[in-house]
Length: 284
Length: 337
Image (cartoon, rainbow over all chains, first blue to last red):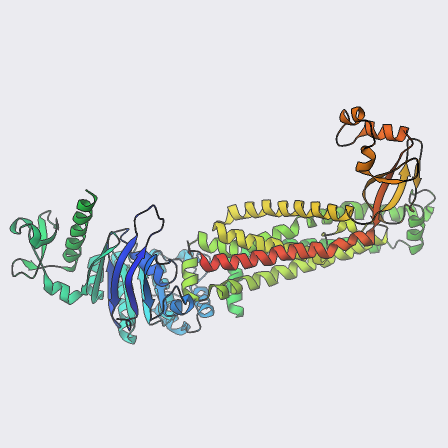
């Protein structure tokens, strides 16, 4: 587990003592060479977890290991092992794409400018274009090129797809998958758009209300879970019930021959519904 | 390295450009004024003649024209330069320092910058260096140009002490102090405009506090008596042409003993003192004069008063250095939002 590029060990973070935990008791490991989807509703703690990997947040409980390094102890080393794409493409609007690559080169000795430039050109962009003139999708491509240019063994992507149109999302994921698979890197991709990450990711980590509710390989999860009409199952057999696309009430069940194989979206929905039911009953 | 410095300057081009331009315009203006003063070709005899007759009477007729022109240029235009120089180093320092961290936090670009650069200290130094160098060179040019102008003023009998902090290295120290302060406040607030406003207010507060300390320091020096005065006469003790900076008042008792201002007032009858104006003490003064006391104007020479200059430079340099150190700590610890 400690050889994994990213390990969360009972990780917990609370922003104020009077407020509930943003994340608590989360333990999982991201296997080397994988693209892991970190999925959860808004406020589930995905960003908190990713930002803690960069030393942007300090754990209040447990710890994180990035390439075997605790960011609290040696943030510089931990950050240098990571390529990061923030939630909103946080780029300098008055600078050009080329200026960003220059900043990347000045900031990180390992920054591979020609490689990043090739990614930018591959997205149909020229380096002399100002960031302020780019669309959201193009800015996301530049942010991704910056992260890939670091040639870091671990990529952390904090909901980079949230504000992109379907075409831009596909381009983004294609670039990411090509890079990660091509050089054997590892990626943790946070998103709440499950259908998009289904094609790109081979592992799934689901957070709900700051707690880990599922950590499994995508293939395993798909083998394990099935969906049936909610009326066909009785209480404890269902992991969670949720509304299907046609408005019908479905239930996510495990290891049963009944029903049909669940999609990744349904697996996530079932677990999130179960977590919500659990927290409602705890509150009551 | 130069490419990264160019990008940093591009990021803050408005503030750095405005600051550098203001300093260069001021410096060039000071040099133009100095050139015009020299172009008057006031004969050295006229200067000696003027310095020998402080009341202006008896100055050679041939000297009055060029001297009047000289006085007008140094008084009006030179006065404008020094008036602006009172505020310019603080404005330039804040313009350079505030946006370095504040803008990154405000625009949320800090998370990109700090995720690319493992060491935030190195990131901060890389951001600061080109701005400090460019604005430092500009401010130094303006400060040296103002020094040239100030030297002409002193040659004509002006007090160096009254221009302290308005030219030369002290201007650079003040700009550095404001730069550090702006950097720190920007890093703490994470908002550019509020940091400018707070930085300006704090700079004024520091100038006020340092001014008070400076006055106290001046009063603490061993004074010389500039003149003694009673109702009837004013008796100069020191040559009026000698540059003496007045630092306070005292009293000469009828028996010849020298008293401090407070010691003299303590001898005024209580009923007179208590109904008197607590700032000017006109009735108490009149009573003392009536008793044969004389007012003493106390002061120190311009050269001795200029002994404050190293302290002034030290205070502002320390403010700058401590603030930069504080900003390093804040940048190292805070979240990039």
